[in-house]
Image 1 (cartoon, protein in one colour):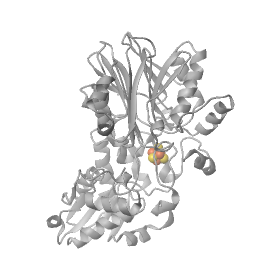
Image 2: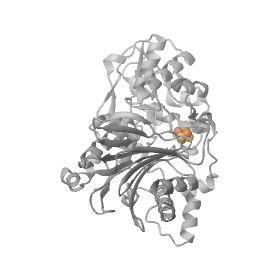
Image 3: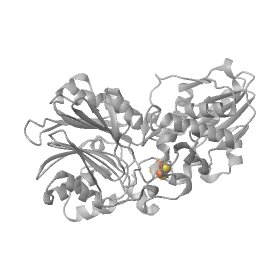
Image 4: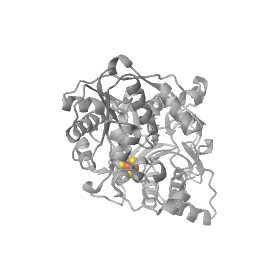
Length: 475
Ligand code: SF4
């Protein structure tokens, strides 16, 4: 979760297949640790031994961070040379250990384990269709709908890849999936490429991950991104094969989530050929060009405002400064029960370095404003510490619309920008000036990469259900 705004991450997926037969659970743990920023509410690992009895899957899931869920002895119990893992923030389905992933299914053809990042827009209708034919769901997450679709198709299909292809023809929405069958590791990405997924290799081990920072954390080399609409399969001969879904979206219509670059992805990741750090620097530079100001220092709100602040400083010529000290040992804010408590814990977590701001005109850069209360607290503290002016620059346009593709943007009632003008927001948060990234400048962050920016402009790349249906999908 964004400490100052309340935006919540999505999920992270990871998969590994060691063709030499080595255990993969420890590496999966470290890979997931590198993806922990994408979800902190639950996590899980499922492994299998490709030379053992077909369909014997060992798995463990729990609520909390990886370090809280997996004690070393637990990881050692998970023996096997093929496996997948997941870290989750609950974008659909409630916080409940049953909803933790990977999901493991035992069915007619053996076993299937699946981990998914994203959100479907037709999950409800598929779920009802299956329930009407007798299916019993154990979770409230979209991922179970996908797993059942695949299992249903697999009964008729000659291979798991064909079943995945058929199942993906039935689901609509955003998905990056890693899937483990008894002898194969499969990765698939939706036709629009909304959520990221990449492939890596370490010696004779294939790896798939939401971001390449997870590959590097286990010493694997980046091979390539999975393409939008592509299914990649690693088989027991160690070959990586590729095929495409029937639904083809022309490259210019693809819709990579711009928020991966603004906020979600880790600063050292590179997604679809665009370095996240560079994208944020370019975003900050675009802000400096659009909203210049006379000031003495520029600072970013940790962590995702830091690179954009650097970009603003470089483009404006105003010196970059470290203004906030972050106490990393304060408990995670999302478990605090009320908004007030959440905000006070943000204040404890971020303190202002008084000597840096005293007598200075300060520009602070953050990635977004949702409710506005926390940035207002930071501005008050900056002024209390002696800043003479505080100018706020936001490296995303105002959120005005919900995300249906796996990001938990607060509802319209909670979004300050949906109810107030820019000038009103400036006044409410106590800033001397305020500037949001214009929608027209978002593209400059990522060059030619086609992007989704629907939460800013209401132009969804995929038809979405009306709000009533969406409310039913949410719980
Ligand atoms: Fe990303 Fe916004 Fe599109 Fe959701 S609506 S996928 S958060 S750009």
